[in-house]
Image (cartoon, rainbow, N blue to C red; front, side, top):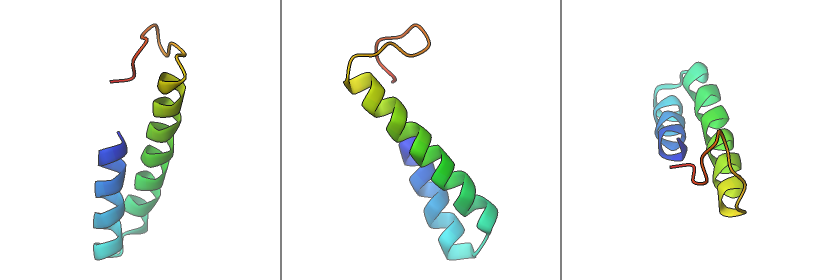
Length: 51
């Protein structure tokens, strides 16, 4: 999810489409939150690891 967010940020920046920029930021933030929660050992959705 983090990689997809970064890709959408880059595409949105290059093409000037603000919707891709916004979706990229949202996916990046959600991916980072899930990554940190998983690294701290919290089970998310019944899974110990996010990936």
